Length: 446
Ligand SMILES: [Zn+2]
Image (cartoon, rainbow, N blue to C red; front, top):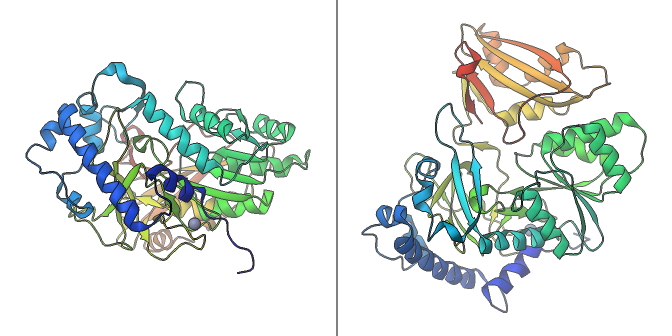
């Protein structure tokens, strides 16, 4: 390799945070064990939920023995958030309410103290220094109105590394967002993959500005290869993916310049990969469900929280030289496999790869209607002002998916679609909708 890759800044940050001179896997493990022991003792004492859930469980004496402990599930978080909290409500400075997938169910509530939010700002500041430096104008295309929201914490993090952040909010008008980006001469963007894709395709058709962003961080939803290819083709920019969810304290891991998996936020979170069926901890390198335990959180520590995301640890060392664990890019959730025929299964990511690279296409929704034959309804969002792609191109594209081709061949499937200039779905993790007739009964398959 001619150019030496910059090591992820998370490495130096972790070294400093755990208070060692040189970071080694052994030192990191010792730190994590000590944090886990403190967290467990704390929740057993202060959280009514964990006092009950972990009653009779002996303290762990090595990292591996954490696998004896029960999991915390999103369902428990939805039902029992109030008793999961540690200490009194007065120490909580932010509560995030998240809708749960499915038709029924309480929203999940996650409680953060001031100190918890500080940890996130620090992680954001360090992580963002991978792509933004002093004086770099950075457009934040995420919600940021409320104090403590993701956009607000990111803004604070960027301030700390002397970048120049502008809080824009989610993109509801692509043209305005692109004009703002060009006017402000934003070097970096942080946003939702399909919204960034819409901006790039609009920018391409607009032809009014030569300004292009240099580096882009995607957030909130999975990043498909089609989006990476389109953003790099149109803007020639470098694209960084990160992994996180509110339950983790927003940030969980971030790619380095090697773009080969997320370096994990190991000073704040302990990650495991488990067999989603048996619950057994899997050896490094095998695919399974991502589970994490918070190491430094105060308001609402979580012990062995099941994320529902499927991935694996990458066992080979990263070209950047970091010793932090790497998690492979997440492509699906454990409930995200849709079986339409015995011939094959589909995920939202499969549709992303064949549709998002088509000219003018910026987003789409998929609804599977379980009739006989099964129908797949596609609503495809195209750039306003651009002539829509011919429908036959859409059908041809989805027929590249073997499960669809095979089901159609067997006469068990019909595909139909329509175009729109604006999908009304809220940004977030996009998912395949499944319905058995009336669309109101739709359930999510991510
Ligand atoms: Zn790396």
